[in-house]
Length: 398
Image (tube, rainbow, N blue to C red):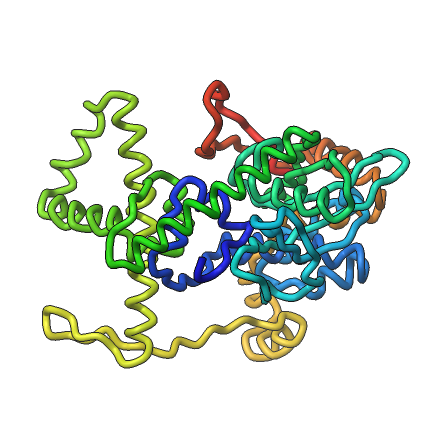
């Protein structure tokens, strides 16, 4: 391989080896990705520097999502350990800690960084590998290839044949939901075989691209996270299709969706999601170009960068100035009073630090309900579930 595959892309490469063979294009992180990174970083730092210090390090945009997280649920271990697995020798090595994905590996090594690795304890006699995720579900822990990579490295490094693995889903409300499994000798060896297979298939796809040929591609929701999205032949075909359908009106297109079978509607949903992400990637690329030198538009106008100021009041300093200028009564009448649920959760924690936090928060919510001070509304989120799990879930966002 010309460049090594990383653990975070193993699932994508297993589904579509061409994803690691076609030219990759940098894409800016979305707000959801940035928020997830902030929660991830907070979970790493809190056990090291303490909860309050770790919270202070979080960008204020995402701080409210980190405040409710019960860090006592996080097992003790070592964060951000980079490892490499050599498919040629079936061996593993540690590359370092906190190296920022700066992997120095051989051509036959696959590299990756484990979010958390925990040594065996009296309560848990096996090594544990943890991968933090947001609310979007990934492959179950028992068959998750990214987790399997980490477990395989641990198994080879410490000469063990059983490793515990966990996916820790951290919601926007700060709740950690665990998916746990134990990989035994057969599962560990199966992971090694899958890694060797992914390596071989990616290598073959890269040979095709290097010779000027087009590798086979596999489309699906996994395309949304593909770095080669904008150079993929399947995506080019979708863009051409979009250009054709754009000539029809929305009123002509939308009614056809209602006449589709469930199977065709599901396939259409996947295509729409992929197209949405492809359009976002294209917009980001064009916006970056426009911010540099502007872009001429077909009607003769120009898309130009304009510096827009962002202003935020420092309330304790602003109020004296405003009261003096406009009067106390008028200023007080203009102040919009609000209290976020995150702030209420923070107050509740002071009553019961540690393991009793959830019970304390529940008691505060009950008191607010009894006083008629809490407005609650259920809403539905669309999430991708495995076959057989077709049910509507209402998660408690408190």
